[in-house]
Image 1 (cartoon, rainbow, N blue to C red):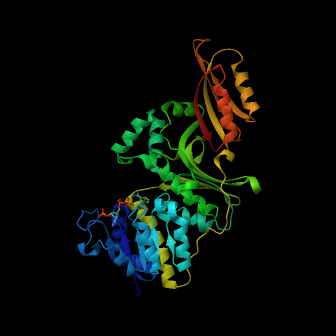
Image 2 (cartoon, rainbow, N blue to C red):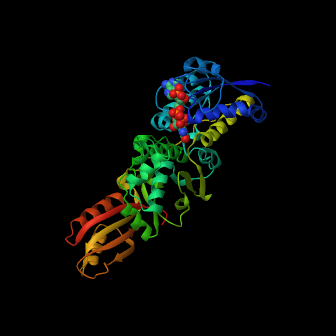
Image 3 (cartoon, rainbow, N blue to C red):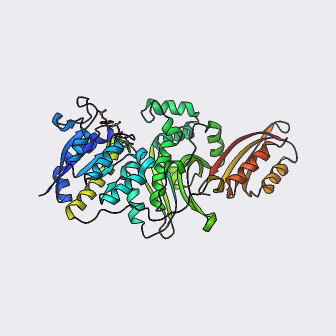
Amino acid sequence: MKTLKVALLGCGNVGSQVARILRDDAESLASRVGARLELAGIAVRSVDAPRDVDLPRELFTTDAEKLVEGADIVIELMGGLEPARSLILHAIGHGAAVVTGNKALLAADGPALYGKADAAGVQLSYEAAVAGAIPILLPIRDSLAGDRITKVMGIVNGTTNYILDEMDTTGAQFADALADAQRLGYAEADPTADVEGHDAAAKGAILASLAFHTDFDLNQVWCEGISSVTAEDIAAAQEAGFVIKLLAIAEKIGDGADGGVSVRVHPTLLPRRHPLAAVHGAFNAVFVEAENAGELMFYGQGAGGTPTASAVMGDVVRTARRLVLGGPAAPGSATGRVPELPMDKVTTSYYIGLEVSDQPGVLAAVARVFADNGVSIETMRQTVPADGGGAAAQLRFVTHRATEAALAATVEAIRGLDVITSVTSVLRVEGV
Ligand code: NAP
């Protein structure tokens, strides 16, 4: 039986589990691939660092470049931009197929890497880069290749889903839910990349690129995190039948010169009956809408060494089978050039919470501002304080789809009304 040499770059959370599977399941993998997968070496920073998995010391090296040069398949699980990028290019230059889970690198530099891999005729696979164990990139890229995807909405960051879920179930403020997530190991000591939406934005760029056959990079993703979501926002959303989730959304809006694809990450109100509303804790899910397939949902563990190693190994086996059978690598899927839709042209529904003085004519004044700006109201709820007139009352609106520009003008005009005590929240709504 033929032997394929596998170089593993990185032996942390994910890499150590990949090494374990390659060694423990060697026989079974060989029968599935039609060739032995030989773990030729593991590149790390420190060969003597303790590891989660018991592995022979002689497998470890700090010379990643040399390891790459002798490999048929290179698995990059170091993370970060450099030296991961240079090593992937080095692997491609030596004709090795590459499997990576590095969303940060792909979102920053994916198109250049896909282009190099295509030109060299080698396979570059990255299922683990989005939503950990969940098989989502292959279904979007291949299973739905004969359909037209119109929208992808994903809960693709477990940390923020855990925090928002805690806030929703316990009424906690953001800072307390974050501290809890840090204590339990769901959030890092520096949580910026998660809570400010940067990690979800990287995944959004990758999802959008595959769904719309166009290269989108991180700079094209509108990004708002969850650090300004308050317990009061969550309570108001609950009262109106919504839950707040951080979603990465890639959506085709409009046609012709005014149309394009919007790629955005922001806290979003979802009706509690929406399938994504039932995604709790640190779980991930991706909801896809396609013209012919209709609605699809993919759910599972979005992180963790062992679940993520499952996605990596899927790519490794597929890549190895292709090497055994021969034939060209599957080309990249960026065959089109769909324009990006700037945020001010994006249309969505909005939830607007207002605190107003409880006096006659307030509702009419606010409704006039909506009408003047061309924003139509879908639902309105009014809560009047129990002790009657004088004190502040709450008005809560959900609008029909409107542009960001029209909404911004509406909110500014509402703020200028004498009867408004405060605009308590402005949040985008999906799934209504
Ligand atoms: P990790 O635990 O931090 O491990 C990184 C590994 O890379 C370590 O073994 C480290 O070596 C090695 N490394 C880092 N820089 C190196 C350098 N300059 N030269 C040689 N070795 C270097 O990372 P991880 O959590 O396994 O994540 C790996 C990748 O998978 C990342 O791209 C991440 O975004 C992606 N991913 C992770 C998850 C997850 O749940 N963890 C989920 C999806 C995708 P030492 O051990 O010697 O320091």
